[in-house]
Length: 243
Image (cartoon, rainbow, N blue to C red; front, side, top):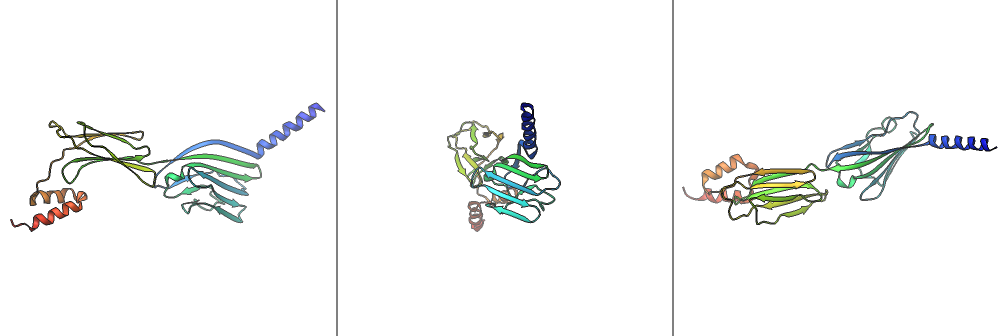
């Protein structure tokens, strides 16, 4: 009787393992603003596929495909959907990825062999950006846009300015620092940016703009993307003067 009991227990244990198989967590990443696809392994004779999404902010989203007769969608953004027809392709597609999409994604598939769970953790990445340019008054300005936490900016030679940080709804933060040292000792100011996703150094030479028609024309032709309202007004005032 004891041997028979152990045999029954072993059979039941193997049956449970067969009916419910869970994979380890797969880590995937996607860039902010881009599209992302999370694939669930293709299987035959599927009777149900369910995506359960638990983002780091907001409620749980559920997409379910039931035996080719019904597709359910509960509390999901319009950006999150099946990549194609779930009967043939069970992959999930996220359009215009946001920082809030970070979190855990579980694909559950059911067929005659049992239930199969595939777990994913999505990390959203933001491409870091650094910019160094001269402002309207000829002062060097350094910008760094990264995911939180904010990047650190400092200058060589040392600057008297205090960086300003602006947070954005997409989870990124832009730090702006304006070089205001009294003297550079003849050296071009160098901006140094430090962040987990970005370490970069750039130098620039800026000069106060001489308000002449010739210099304004050069400014317009060579730096059209830097044409601010202040510079447009300067051009208009200068052009009105008699030569």
